[in-house]
Image (tube, rainbow, N blue to C red):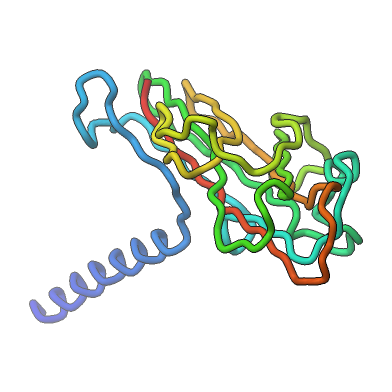
Amino acid sequence: MNNNSSKQILLSVLGVAILVVAVVGVSFAAFTFSDTQDNKENTITTGAITLTYQESENGISITNMMPTKDTTGKALTNDSTDVTGGSTNVFDFAINADIKGKTTINYTVSAKKQDSTLDDKYAKLYLETISELGASTGVEKMAPKTYQLDADPKVDSNGRPADEMTLTTGSFTASANHYYRLKMWVDESYVPDGTSKSFTVKVNVYAKAA
C-alpha cells in the first residue's frame, strides 16, 4: 500500500515538472527589471512584461526586395501574395504587462541588426500601433526611418543596449496589452547591383520599474 502511494506521489511530481517544462517551452520573454530607487537587483515582484508574437522568431527580414517608395512600404500587409515581398516584411507583436499592486513599468522597444548584407542606409523601418495581433489596419507610431543607432550611442534608461535602434517607448501602470506592427522595406534610393541582398532585425523589449 505504501509503495503504491509513493508511486502515485512520484508520478504527480513528475507530472507537475513536465507541465512546468511545457509552459517554459512555449513562453517567449525579453525583459529586464531593476529597482531604480535603491539599486537592488531582482526586487521587482509586482509586475512582469512579456513579448509575444505569432511568427516562429521575434524578428523581421527582407531578401532581394526591389526599391520601394515609403507610401508603398507603409501599405504592406500580412498577405503572403504581396508582390513587394510578402509577410516577411510585416511583423506583429504584443507587449503584455501583468501588474499586481501599485507600480509603473517603462519599456523600450528596439531593433537589433542580425546578419545582413544590405547597407543600413537602405533598410527602411516603420512602426504602427494596432488594436490586436493580425488587425487589418494600424496607426503610425514611428515614421519611416532607415536603420540607425543614436548619434551618441549609449544604454538607455530602460536598459536598451547601445548597439540597438530604438523603435518606441511606452509604459504600464496596470495590466494591459500594447500591440505593434513593424514593417520593413528597401529604400527607393537603392540601386540594385545584381547581387543578392538581405537585411534582418530582431525585436527586443527592455523594461524597468519607475
